[in-house]
Length: 459
Ligand code: ATP
Ligand code: MG
Image 1 (cartoon, rainbow, N blue to C red):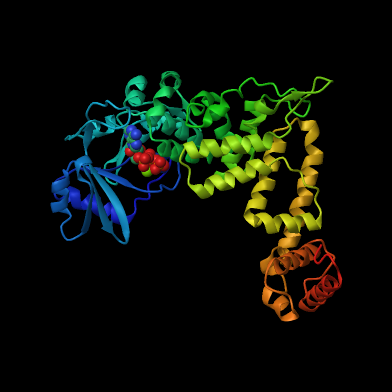
Image 2 (cartoon, rainbow, N blue to C red):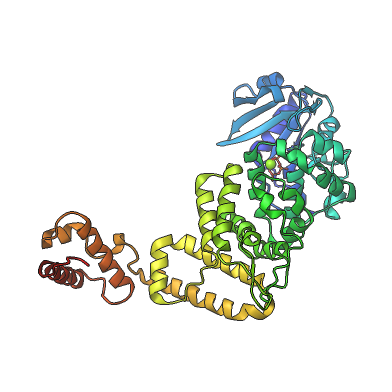
């Protein structure tokens, strides 16, 4: 299982500490990822040396005292930062967020015991190999997520571990063992005490897990997500019968399938999570007893905006998600002018995201109604490729004439000038005029002369 590609600077740090008589290990996520055959994002190091001892050991190197009180120093070596933390044990917790105190300890076992999950509580050293007193490797091999120690207590100490656990389960395809799972559900309300931006950071990472692994985790812990700020709109989804032959799944099942079916990009996954959140509020039932949800995209967009504000999402991400949710049910017919118009309006990335959302949404519909929708999406994608490939004129920026050209023709500065530019753009987008300077100047001139001879200029 896995191999360890310890970067040379990290090895040098371990050697320097051990040369000075202080035991040191690579620890946590990098050990887990290496065993899984993945490339670790960063290598966390831990040591028996106390912070002030580390400063002595690393004299001559650039050392940043990152969190001396928590025992963390950052060593700047070979152009990169390396975090080294003294073995520590956490004191009691009274706010469900962080320990009231930490104390430095002598043995690595004690440090591993404060860590959240067995798969995160392994240490490794290039000569001594794996040190795994909690059985993290066996859990990893059998794909089990297990708290270090008593789950209820560990989640009660730090509620964020609940979301971390769900994220690890989704990313690595782990099943939380019975007590860990029960404690996650049991402790969910304490998430309300965690800063919304920390919840949001976890949610974003969780949602970008591989779809096939994410889906069962979302299903199992849906109630936990519904506790997060603004996500109370998820509460009504489980068991919500959509009452329409296009849907074979309940609203939660449909939503999960849509999330898992869109590519793992944050705006898309968040938009998929919230795209139908407004349905319950928009339900009407026709004479045949079939339910409809007219206007639900707008209501869902409102709920998405509210949720992402309460979760303190970055503004740009929120804007992207709200736009996708608002437009997700538009189903504009695929024509060349539409493709140009929407590309001009949204830009390529947002339009591609919108099509990807429609595709994911479609794949979560009853199988019988998928083929025509998928065919229409394929047409849209082909048109989009064509328009992008041809570098077509899509916005005023791309138009072959500018404001100054019209001024030179004799237009007065002011609203007519803008209206004429927009009119020319419309003609180009609709394919009635070519985007050539001479053609557009002629059309503008005609319009100007028409306006001069008309009692209703520019109507
Ligand atoms: P990733 O970097 O992929 O999120 P990671 O496991 O490296 O995963 P970090 O947040 O970088 O996660 O934390 C490094 C290590 O510190 C973890 O592996 C775990 O051992 C420990 N740890 C982090 N956060 C907590 C926590 N809230 N409670 C207990 N231990 C934690
Ligand atoms: Mg890490």
